[in-house]
Length: 143
Image 1 (cartoon, rainbow, N blue to C red):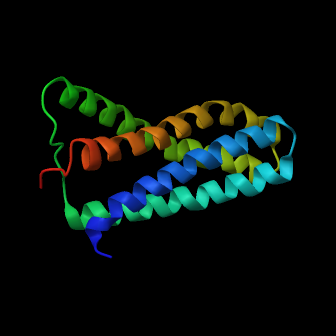
Image 2: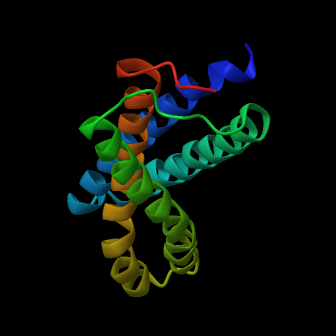
């Protein structure tokens, strides 16, 4: 495995996080609290692994440019911009959601999680779409 194999690993981790987020949401809505806790801890681990792999990849591979042209290029960069901005915002949101849960302050956890969940889900889903657009559908990217 080389550093250039990491984009597919990152997309897989994002897709896994998406499934886990939806499972965690379903578990808490159906009052399966223990399953929710286990699933969300697993989601944190998967998302942390993604962040580590993502940072390692971009440190070593540098910037990659989208190979598409025209309207799809504009769409890609708008999608990428929203993805990146919300990913940056999402990290402190996740921390602010996990801390009250760990402190057993579930009312506060629930209030914050209502905002964190959709942002985290959007970031995970768009991460997979960005990968597909950049590396598969209109790829490989320009280095």
